[in-house]
Length: 343
Image 1 (cartoon, rainbow, N blue to C red):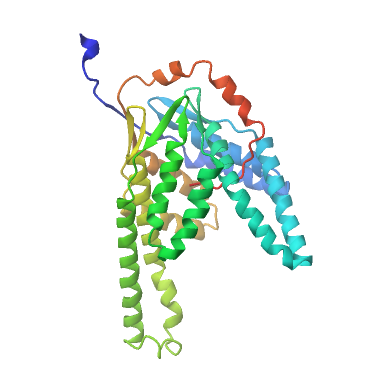
Image 2 (image 1 turned 120 degrees about the horizontal axis):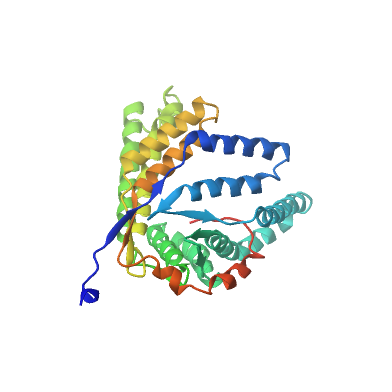
């Protein structure tokens, strides 16, 4: 009879245990070796960095793993570097073929997006079980080329809807083992966030112009000595608006995501995120970049603190259901390149 009783949700917070001093040693070695090897070591640097952050992020007592091979990443980067060089040389000597390169890039872009997301997923592991991504070229073509192109005819007013479509596509085509993630993300919170952001920008822009130029928006602009500083004065506003929209999108996406009967909860705060990004930027500038590891650690820690996994049932069920499936999944990795176009 006890087996028929409804199971109460168990809240498992994400935790990040990384330390600035530890990561600084990895970071500085990565920088030095990347410079000494003319960028070749960057593939190994990416793997070491990802392994550190994955390995120090835990959920329900277990940490995540990053399993990508540096040589696979290096091959992808060398191909990308070769294509860039080919583009630069070809367009320099034959400028008329530039449109052909642009068309070719647009055609291959959806494939790159799918391969990048799949690479990231299948090289992420939790409790010895890999994630996966199942999105197709046609879906990526519509979501990242066709729909954004159509949004031009609405002056960008439907772009919040496109963001919702892209995020839903990413979640609904992701899986943990054999269990797919699902999303019922609505475009309403994204529309609202973008509306508030646009309103703030309009008020700030007109307010600064009115204050500095005394109401003569056009005739006094070039002659006013304060005019060159207008853009700098608005930088905190732009920064705040970006953080506000970005935070709302993350929260809305996470809070609408489920894994079987389990769900997620994200409660990132705009004010805290703004403070972290602002002080991180200042710290990097003042330290000439030496505090970059510290900024990454504090941001990762805050994001983990604000994210929870709400489990209804046994988490070991995923492992049992996926028995015998992992070996076949591992064979898919051989030709996946690390060319990231993240969402």
